[in-house]
Length: 143
Image (spheres, one colour):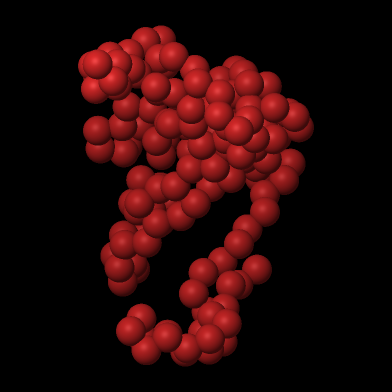
């Protein structure tokens, strides 16, 4: 499905109706093949990759993250690319909570950043992680 511009914006050199992106839904074997290639080939090729941020769940167990460039996919011919483009990837799960979704994706092999030294703070049903050092700094400011 091609995403088109709804209105013209001169600063972006964008005209109404111009194709600006695409939206793809993968299911079944294609979804599993993409997830396998993403986890085993693409993510390890990212420079300075330390794991996926585990704070990017939507509250219903679905996980979304962004990639700045598509060069980590070796199927893409780099000579045919006119400029670097990024992408957002969303994994929709059958989980109903973020904790269930995180556990499911962790079992599938998603490399989340470690949060061992983190304190979970619940705020408006969203889970946020606050490091011990940030908590200490906030306590000092209150004094």
